[in-house]
Image 1: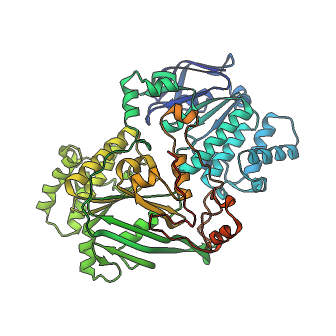
Image 2 (image 1 turned 60 degrees about the vertical axis):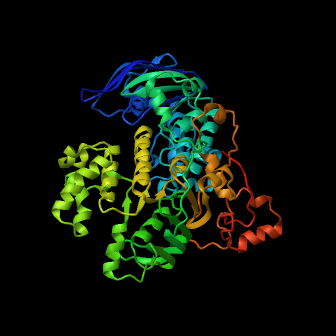
Image 3 (image 1 turned 45 degrees about the vertical axis):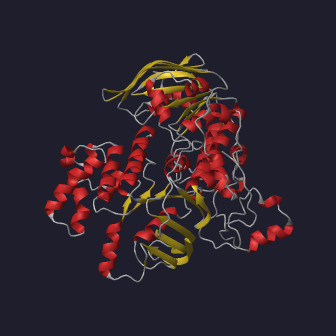
Length: 595
């Protein structure tokens, strides 16, 4: 159906894709994998002539025998959306923000089919219903949809004209694991309904393992290995492919953990709450409600321990971190840091306490001042704490060496380093004042898998050498399995399960935890494609945090709720569950193995 032969793409004379050849048969899924900059997206966009003007494309792209390279804009417009459809990485920028979602899908129908406006709108509602979005939302604007709903609507638009080929460019990259599972299920539905061939571009090897029939691995613009998914994952031939697979943290890969001495917690949180005002109006803002961002979080971290805080976007993870780092009295609940209760500290005590807890941010480029050399960036916390210049000058080379960077590069600026190196600089800055607790807010989510592995190994080594405690926030449960000693699961601002990572992952008791774990794809085609795992698909998106919910706030999405007796459902609807002795906040907890 689609044949790419000796494809070359240059941007202003710089090669991005070199001599790439691929073939795709009807009904087949071809996974295109590789790290950032490997040429995956450029290859997919070249198929439909969607590259920018500074791109030069050479080679051949044939759709059912028809040459697309060099085809005129009118011919490409006829093919786009009808015979070849595209699912973009960022649906918010792909949709027009000033037009309703239903109208945009109807426009795609009318552009290629001679149907009336009314019939096109009916078709749009049918397509939205097919991907799990109520037809009543057909008049909604893109900003009124969640990220997962927008991606499902984008897939609905791709299905509109029953194309021969669907190009999906990182369709699940920015989504939570539960929403990702929904989108992948919808993508399978789209393929089944249209019979289309799918070119799936992704850096997530678990997604590729669960979806692809064949896999092509790209490195520096070239295809270095290709074959069936079982062959590439099970018997990789190329060193790069083996390195890529070896760097992937696996959800089902337990590792031995050292026994921690029983000591007083460095951090103890009980019933933490944080509410933000919900404002409306442009010139004159007025409060119309509240956002209950955190509404009952409990945490304990001991010296030398890593506690992972996990949950979907909007669950309150990052808000919890920043509430702790304010070192002020919480709105509700209590926080004790190194035995000192926040809210009762004098200024000098607060400054001394701030030295003992530091943070590493999610985006290292945004958190490093682009106008300062990295040596000054690392030394800045030392100067803030009153250290003299000589001490700072001595510490900077030591810290750069400790995080695996060359001390001679202290005079360079952040843009002169790679993403992984910038994150190491952020870690060095956090370590400069010798903290005892390191707060890590999604520290590896923006990194390629091989770079991610290097940063995780660094964090493991630093914890062992310096006796640090980590509060590690992540939505990637495979990473959590690799690095954490204990895990705390948060849903809609409240802790729903907590315990040792092995116990929670192997024998989860809360249905939300079970759904999270079951949705994580494994880089194992045989287990994923043959469905040798239990997959729990949660209905819809997380509820809005602008409402106060009675009883269990998870019950609207809980797969067990419908099977309960009437009296049991009443208890779920009216009584707020609290953490029991085994660490699950559920009225009817049941152990269920899902990995």
